[in-house]
Image (cartoon, rainbow, N blue to C red; front, side, top):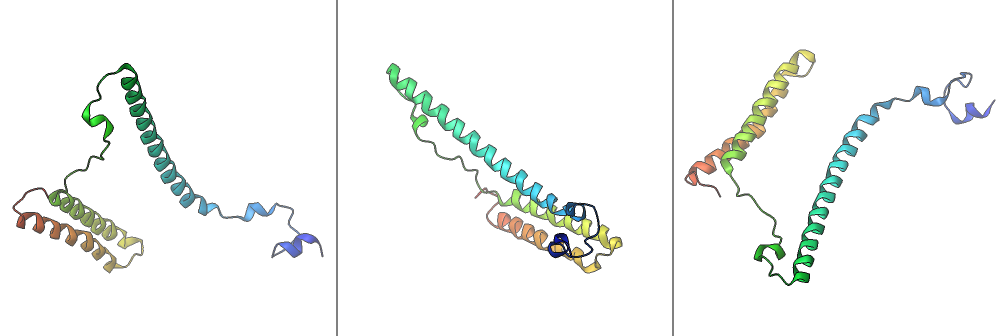
Length: 140
């Protein structure tokens, strides 16, 4: 008995390396996670660069004795007003898309009742639209 028979299950008489039998399907989710991680990292680098430039501008203005604009020192994050109408329409669109996709997949062996999963975001969207209408159609 040779060493390969002790390490790898199966016939040890094949002359091919063990890596030939590996399934590389795990690379797809790893690639997706690496892509998302890269996007987050690039965003963080961009924010750090903006902060560095802002601090450099403040330093140069103080060295020259110029007054600082009032908004330059306070870096408050800009927040969009919550809009239930926009969020509701997006949720309804996602629900319709899920319904259509799962209906089309019925021929591929997916159960017929799975298409009703699209109701979940669709009904959430309807609730957001009702909330928007009850508040008088204004932004929150």
